[in-house]
Length: 285
Image (cartoon, rainbow, N blue to C red; front, side, top):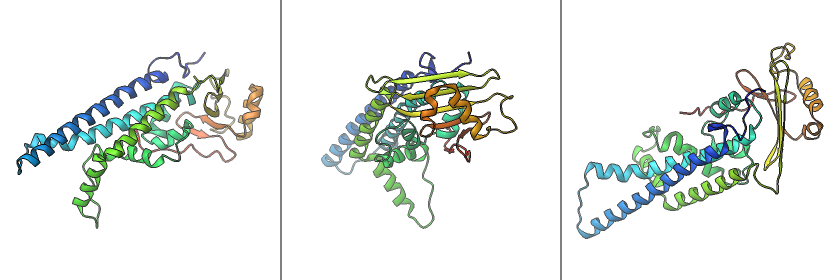
């Protein structure tokens, strides 16, 4: 049997490992934020008691850097929780497909992953997912890129306000907890039992089908070098017949299931026009 993404496999193919990574990042984000609040309040007391107060450069660097670092850690924590759910989406697929799509399809696009794992708040909370993605990609990592026609100082002040927003950080922490709770229920909720089917083809291809478990049904196909018949991906009707003939449940789910072809260098949405699966472009930097 070929290697597959499965719960029993260690490391990045085990959803519990992603949750564990996320928990460490989440705890660090909250502790760093709490320490920053203590230092900030202490500075306010000093300013009220004996103005003016001269701050050492290192003291200001901590005051400015800690909220950014806490938001960066929080963004990564939510990303880990979301990607824990992705292991369920790719259950039964090639590990190489999962690793490739993590980088090329999803990257740091938290909103896209939330939609992929059927997180209930994916649409309502998309602005928060965008804010965390922006923090992970730019706001909490890099200097500001000046924008023509805008005051650079105003840009700095707006970013500082976002980083220092106490209520905003608390809201994003609630989001992290909700995402974790959703991801931890995938394939583990007795009220929504999951089923999986995997078939290996003689030429090295495979079929992976899943339904239930808190996720939308998904069908993944890959044909070996003898099964393409002149096309990569193979023709839509050939894939549909192959999948539906493999297992009786697949025919009932075909029209509403997410369908993907695991190609050699990219993942392709299986449809009558066979458009490529959307690419994130974030990468894993």
